[in-house]
Amino acid sequence: MNDGTVNKSRRRFLIGSTTLVSAAGGVGVAVPFVGSWKPSAKALAAGAPITIAISRLEPGELLGPMPAWRGQPVFVLKRDEATLDNLRENTAHLADPMSEKLEQQPDYAHNGFRSRKPEVMIMVGLCTHLGCSPKLFAEVEPQDFDPQWKGGFFCPCHGSMFDLAGRVYSGVPAPSNLRVPPHYYVSDDVVVIGLDSENS
Ligand code: FES
Image (cartoon, rainbow, N blue to C red):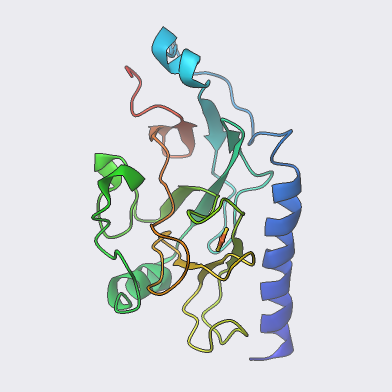
């Protein structure tokens, strides 16, 4: 672990912390609605969907300003091939590696990466224990809370840990994986969060 790595890790941590502060008042990068898209009355009643642009996301970083949907922060993170390999290979320490708690993700995210696209992670950024916001530690490097850290999210409230697919570690207070919100892609770089499809 060299100084550059530490600084990079710390910078990401600070990005996560800072953007969370703004989550209550802000949403992601605003983009125009496309075509004649309109949410149904049912969807609007449950909380309006949001539209975000992800073209500027870099691997290992959370989208900022952090989007908020129904008053909850949404983690949007780009994953590179090394991260995807890591997620495939390191599952022994996880409580629900196959996402068998089906209520934690829509059907289209019931897969190893818990996402529609392997390279893009989209999660509700609230710990499934008591609702604190976990912090991103994206690097694979020893941490005080886990000398074998593989990269992921750490909840400082009571020590729950999640990998970069939001899968919860075994033996921590959080009872389930982070929740994947309904979402769909309007294009490669534009995502609607809050609906499963254009016709929801
Ligand atoms: S709220 Fe996250 S561990 Fe308790």
